Amino acid sequence: MEARTSPRPPDQLNQWIEERIQLMEAPGHAFPQRFSKGDWLLVAAVATLCLAVIVAGAFL
Image (cartoon, rainbow, N blue to C red; front, side, top):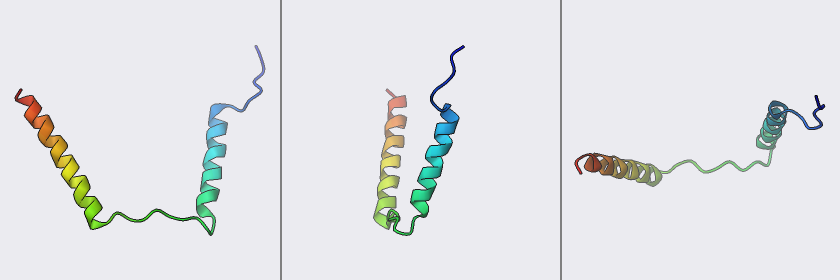
């Protein structure tokens, strides 16, 4: 059998996760803005429209 020269995938994943955690815990990290009321209304409208299309499709 050949010896692996690159790290195993779980090791790569753990390393990537640790790097991301360090970036997010950095003092200058910019967090995304919270959803506004308009954003939530848009989500609800899209979900309602999708549900209506699915129900309408059931009657075709």
